[in-house]
Length: 482
Ligand code: 4AD
Ligand code: MG
Figure 1 (tube, rainbow, N blue to C red):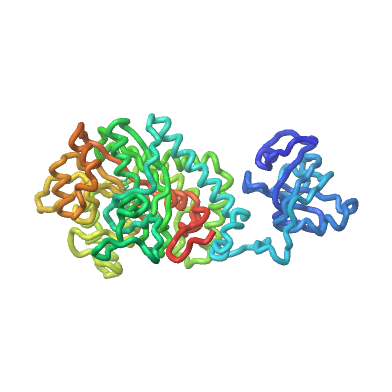
Figure 2 (cartoon, rainbow, N blue to C red):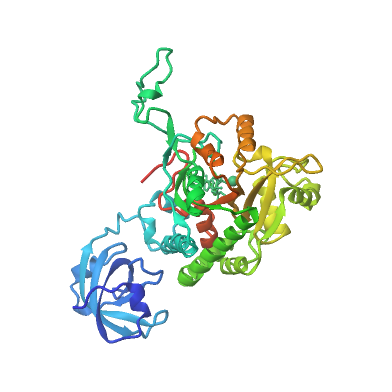
């Protein structure tokens, strides 16, 4: 018998009347005759035709949803609708039974909430098969994009002693017995006794270490897990998420924005080419889901159209100040429809404001720049004070339809005196970040970088409404199952 062939390759093959062996999991078995078999290589199932009159009834009984089987038989042109080829089974072997009374996945539609509770099995559904194949392609495309451009993939640490964003949302790392940690004479926890001899945490961002790499290697990127103990129960936040963080020497903010826009378009195009079937399936899934909503809440474009639209159009670039002017004059602001009315300059934008700009006003991806310095991290390059006395930094956020902020980045403050002054103002310990400041002491140069939230990207490309459905095993408040 021939070697196992994956279903994707088999469905694409031009040959028929050849013997093949396929292995996979039974999706359905109908009329004691037709097995829909899936092996995860494609969204499409292979139809296996069973000669039930000449098959042991005991074996037929074991062809249940979820069972793992191996089938050898003849690949023939299919007479039925929906598939070009099918396999006429000559030999079927049950590799692993699946008790239909107990198997949680039934051949029917399950809610995404229910599937989240059985995340160990949800890969076996069409939706999650497609989502994770697209996620895989996007990850590969990220590496390909940077590698083609001579960037160095730099592995920044997961355990650190700093809080790069200064937001205080870190998870502690310790090997202390939490019920009985060593104490100092004055009764405080004695971190000198801890594993690293000091308090440590899981990284919230690889940026600071990334900058050190860029100050020698020119262009680097990180792509790894990051951790935030923010208690946000939203469809856009995870406690553990993956982030892509490039950092480029000799880049200013415009170069930075160009690179980010190019990256986003590149990886979306890659997935569209590579995962056409999955994206077309997900487009249909979203359309079905949206049919449940009232007309005015449905999106004007299908998923496929949205992705294409994103490729075909330049992202709109404007400053925070210009955005505030637009928002102030907007109908929802005047009619008091915003939960957080836009009054003055200087406060952070809420997601309702970002959505208005992207989905209603510009109707395309938007890059906002030059945010008030008060609401941004200490490392961003400070602009000259403007005529209105506004103090801003060379920040940029990319806002996407349906997602909100997908990228956050900036040109970095390379001037030692300005950086130190800002750290003092914000109470960021300079002595702990002596190594970061060293790059400003020795061969400092203009540089810039950004962070792309990988799961938000996967959400955009798959059209999944909840970020918990685009990472295999989501981590969020009160949940670390699996
Ligand atoms: O805007 P953020 O916090 O920026 C940084 O961490 C910078 N150090 C990046 C840099 O300049 N190198 O996060 C960057 C992106 C956000 O735009 C968002 O897409 C994503 O990371 N993100 C999250 N994604 C999922 N869950 C969360 N809790 C996230 N927090 C941020
Ligand atoms: Mg941000």
